[in-house]
Length: 345
Image (cartoon, rainbow, N blue to C red; front, side, top):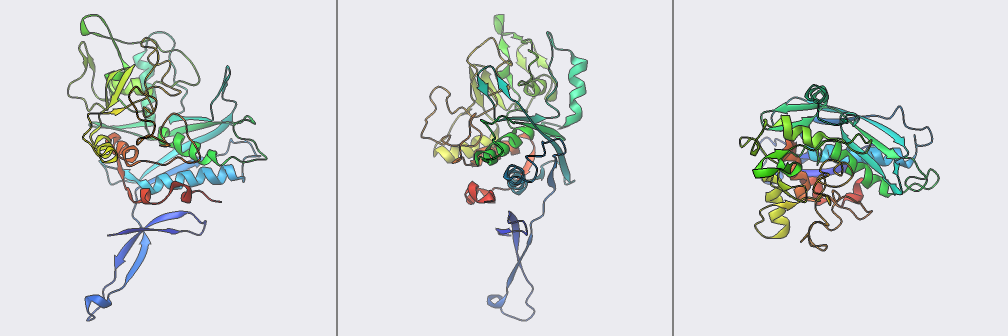
C-alpha cells in the first residue's frame, strides 16, 4: 500500500496508508481510496516532569515533541518482533559546559550515568543491560535519557532557537542507539602481536561507554585476536580510522554516492590511545564528515548525524538504514518530505 502524510489535530505530519475500498459491481476505474493511520509498533514516551517550568509550554517543548513525531514516522518497531515497543525517555536541562566548550545536548541509552573508574568491572557492566534488549545479533534500546544545555548561549528562554529541533532529533537518534550501540573492534586498541587491549574508562559526565559494552558483551566475547568472528560487527578499523560496515546502512550509502563503497567513514578519535575518553562527545559515534578523505560537499554535508547540526540539516537514507542494522524496523517514506516540514512554526 502507498503511504502519504497528513497533519493530525496538532498540526504534525503523520504517516497514513492509502487503502483501496471495495466497490461492489463497479469497474476498477470507479474504485475510490481512503486513508487511515499507518500501522506501527513503536512509540517514544517522553518524561518531561523535571525540565524547568520556563521551558514547559514553550516552543522548545513543542519542537521536542516534533522530533519525537519524526522518529515515530521512520521507526515502526523492531525487526525481530511484532510486539509494541514503547521507549521511555527522560528529559532534563542542565549546564553542559566543559571548560570552554558548550554542548547543546547529550543523549543515550539508559540514564547515561554508567561510567567506570579504572579497570572495567564486568558485574557493574551487566547492571546496565536493563536499558537494552539483546536478540541474536541485534541490540535495541528499552529506555533512554537526554540532557539539554540550559545556558543562555545554547537555549535562551526569551528567544527560542529553531536549531533545538535538530539538536533534539540528533540526540534522540543517539538514545535509540545510533553510535551508542555500534559495536566492533574500531573501539579497541590493537596491542602487541595483534592482541587487543582494553582502555581504562575515565569517569566523565559527557562520556558513556555503551559502545564498548556492546563490543565486549553484546555480540560475543572478545578473543585474543579481536572481536568474535561470529559477531555482527557494525564497524571495523581502529579508533583513528573507524569504518562503518553495517549492510543496510552501507547499501544506502552506495545509493547516495552512486558508487560501490567498502565502508562509511566514522568520525575518528584524534588520540589513538584515548579511545573511549573521546567517544562520548563526537568521536566514534557520528558520521565522518571531517574524517580523512571525506568530501565536504558530498553526502555528509548538513547530514543530521554529523557531530554538529545546523538549521539546514537533513536525515539521510543511510542514517535510517543504520537503525535497521541495529535491529529496528524502518520506513523511508518520511525522507521524501523536507525535514523542516516536521517542525511546528
